[in-house]
Image 1 (tube, rainbow, N blue to C red):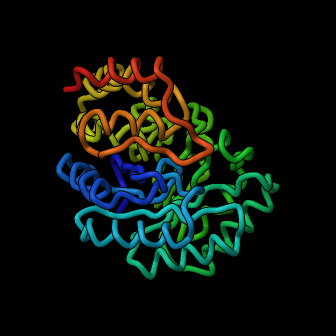
Image 2: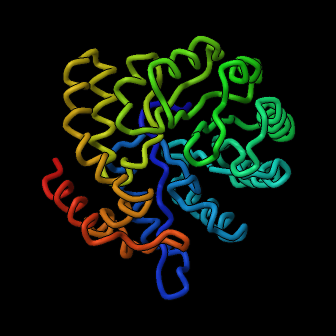
Image 3: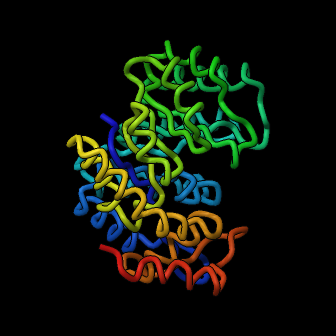
Length: 291
């Protein structure tokens, strides 16, 4: 069900109160689908889910699922640092029609590996829905260990993992213990080619908000067996990908989307702040000649 390039879409805001801009959200969704994206993730890190109220989170998920209309699979970010809240949000995502959920490792709490295993297992046993684990050391302070992946590999609801702090060793560790039905996705867009080379499925790519077709090209070329062209495409995209992370995601991505007329505003909620002028120049120079 989940493969290729999945875009964790931004949540557009408007006005002095930073309300959800549903017109821009609709436009972004249609841009993604018309660009041939393989799936969409709603309310992930790139969607600033941690600053949404539960009502806003539910409304954004509901709106997006209805807008997408089963044209591509929808994954919902329902992971939090509370197991009970994660279960509640995951149940809501399932009720609203999500095809799967993305569960980030509990942040701030810094659980042990046993705690991680118990957390993911409890959510899985409480809600029967496909689960993609989200392993991102930089935002959570905890990395999912190889043995924890091994223990979770027998859970039939777990269908994949997004690994953001990835290396060749980490990728091989995951692949060596993962269940046969697991798909591995790059969380670091610059590693998409290497994840494919290591037997992965593609990427859950923040950059794909702006360059969905170009990110999809890497996977398409790889699947055709044109490995060299896929590598060259990854290399070609590196400067623009890097520009989207010149400041904290999704601030540069939202700026690029506004410049390209895909969303109306590049507002981010505090504690994120507007893109600095020097960073704007970097992003603008890299999106000027997209092809």
